[in-house]
Image (cartoon, rainbow, N blue to C red; front, side, top):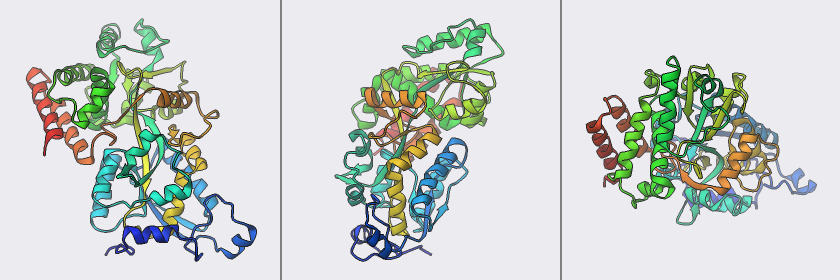
Length: 441
């Protein structure tokens, strides 16, 4: 059975959300907390429940959600928060979410990635226009224009960005670099070839060490997007998804060759490992490098490693000057069963207090650009500086540049390629498969 009054139109729903004329038990208090004592005495506290779907279930992600929830509970103590987080990762989580949305059983709000992934939900009419909430919450200038446009269609906003991660980051184990007789104070590489040269030296000098830790298919797509960015540059990388660059072109062919070479230095059990056990290889001193997003410090720090002493980080090889971003966001689901409490959730998600609590625990940076980061970690401050000064591109694997179906198709192409000897013929087939994903229709 469909949950809630899903027959409401978007216009009627927004009218219910934004009306302040008849306070009721389902109506949130003033967003800015500026109502007078007399008004607060006559306006009952918001009660009921709100259901939120995400895949923030472990580690720093779970702690980030709990910190955000702490802000929510402090402001709305009588609202029961139903945490419908799934314990699978983003891919399977999206599949489960899709089933609920298609069956007319939406949660009130759910995690999505800003960009093409958000556009999929907008096109399917599974999220509601919340432009009026942007106005009510005073968000018109809160987010960078580049980020806001990724949750906007036809000048209408459909989701509120919460936090930003960087995807194109190289991580290194200092002791293993020293053991191989390599510089262990800086790991910036101008291009993929210079990085491959170092991987070769590690294999030759310390044969028991895995030069590059790599995880399963989604981790390999993540790696591949950083290689595309390195070999094509930011403008042509974006052009691949905007139709102005050629998936059949020589730069993509070169990137595929580099990707194959990198996998040749990876752990042989890569297809069996998610990102955490792959990262654990680096933390345990079994792998020298890993290319992964900046959710890595939480794992490395938890193992007693110290940034700058035990591990180093830098932009992924060849990507200096580019920031490959992943942006989490939350919309109001079309047909949300509890629109008033869903509005309250989005208010907290949008707030500076909520975003600070989330990112401090999660290791991300706030999506809002008007927050003082002086109390954040050195890495987070460096990430924020890069985000505001470097050239921004969106992640392929994490839904900014490609829709859900396209990301799935790229994953299938990568898995197929990684299972072959990855020779010249296999590389040609892989390139044709990629071109088909983005030129179909």
